[in-house]
Image (cartoon, rainbow over all chains, first blue to last red; front, side, top):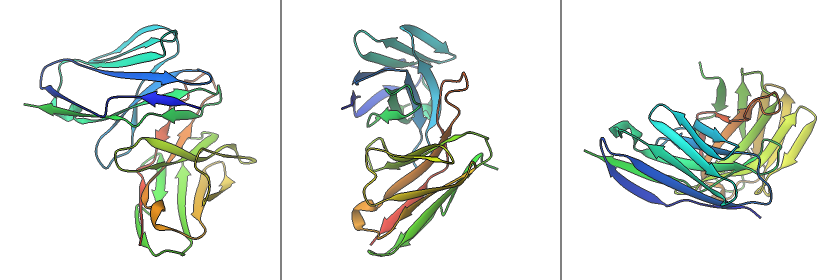
Length: 110
Length: 115
């Protein structure tokens, strides 16, 4: 089976940096996605990692270590609008079928 | 207009009723998915379709059925709704397999309440 773990909740201060971790145990691996979901809205794509290392996209970066089954999403210069849930998802089938973690709810405080 | 459109956006129904949630997309993607989200939880896959002739069960397909009427349309049915099917349902599309990452593009969601 698939097991994807993320912290349930995190709190950080506006302007700070926060790291959201995701660990996974899956029967296969074909890439890891991060999505952002604001309350009551649809998830939107943030990042994709398939090789080890860091992918940077503006204020957001995502890191992957396949040997450790570990990824993190790094958010810099936090803004109030970054308050949302962040979903880690693994494509373990090489078939474009992702399994999601339960998500991490991030609250950014002034 | 949204690229992935779900109807209805909100529905309240009673136990035992048949419900259909519809999804249409203008992205031209072959792959379409139905996910369910419960409060505080991630997305769980109900059914997915890689083309019009290909329908596959996801991890929680019991109590649900689907129909892929065309490349652009994928509907989800609850033949006899029960209260524990109260949830937020998302349709999604993907262009996986065309040299792309396979990221999911989601509709705005359909909130279903079964009384």
